[in-house]
Length: 444
Image (cartoon, rainbow, N blue to C red; front, side):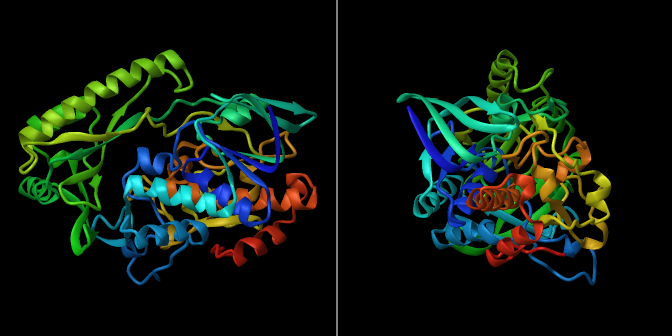
């Protein structure tokens, strides 16, 4: 079988959804290939809150509050709010030196809303479809080869975007990459039969409450939607067992009696592209999930009947392959708040805050050239794959950064397809003009 389109997006996760929406709305015939039966990726499988639509204004007295990621990412939040699927941008009461807001989402409604938006935009959704190979010629990707129960299929496109998080399309096309294996993998579970208020009491009694955000939960304002702990202050008996299974102390929810995310971490000995090592990690993470339930039943009041209500279908990564692009973002770019003449977004969050923060509560820019796979004329990458710098990656890999990169990549790919030009021939000014007209905030 064979089909053609203007833009093919590989991976319907956090960035891929936005990339496909942006491409289709910019006039491109767009196909989205996703191996699972739903969209959303890390946002619905491995995250906590979405980080972050705002600059870190609360940590810097006198700094102006700014929403720096808008456009399609904000539209997704608006759609979720309309169906009760998010607390909105709830300000942090404690821990605002980490993030100024907690944008908590309902995982299942996020899947539904994003799939509806893609359908409305006219994106061809190839769900339950594996990308298995790519055909290239003289630096031009010609076809993505995909496999589903309908058989093998060749999908030709003018422009290709890799949003697989692990770099599957770029690697199969022959792009240069490294596998740094410098982050733990995780499998996050949703836990029912629990009490957010009980967890807050547990943390307060230990003097360990580190983060608190109050927002809309189960239709009521002023409710707990995010909690996290200063781990070093937790009871020793609890902490030793939690550390042994890689249990993070942060959780969020937009529902009563439910932890939307409880994260178990595991550091693999090799890269998560290794099938057999991943199989062993999957088993170990399931063991850790069971132990986590036993632990919170024992220690946290109101959680005596806790049970696993949801788990990810596969482990979630923080880094897979890092693709060699025209520009490699550095931690100095991030912390010094550098912007570029080809910015496609502004961003103001770092996952290692408060140890690392963008200067003066400001923003930095992600340049278009950081999305251009080196050696290719029609291949962009967006999401977890764009910087080799570990500390810079601790910002660029976050959900809202991936969403913003997706809008930049999808818009660029559509403009290139419309003009029948290579990615490097696209005028940065023309790209920025289109992004601004689509509601994207650019600081420069």
